[in-house]
Image (cartoon, rainbow, N blue to C red; front, side):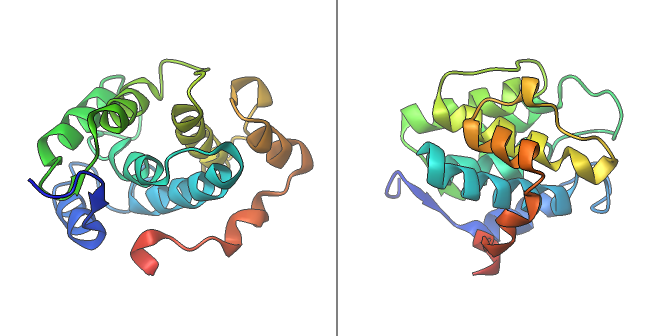
Length: 167
């Protein structure tokens, strides 16, 4: 086994995108994942969330959707896919992996979470609702920084963040 905390980011990205059920152009596909990652990396600077978990959540949370409609089990399928790829394309210690698993599994069912990493993951996903014409509601956000972005309509602030894959 490799060092516990690592991501072979490009290899992971390629493997996951090569194994999609939905089309890559889906509203829940790779373009969305990149946006979630950018929001998450920005938020994590303020929340202290683990950035590896945030980046992995961005990839796994919607990667096992079977459609763009109601698919209530997709988060659990994404979490289980992460479990399958753990220690092959990425490594996290057990505590961090548990956070990733719970963040993926619960991102559509649970609104609020006290853990700053899970809260950051969920807010990053919800901030990207504008891609489908939905304005995020602060009542469904966990972190003060995400609420501020929505309240001030300052989404462009994340544009200075570079995705891990783009580095």
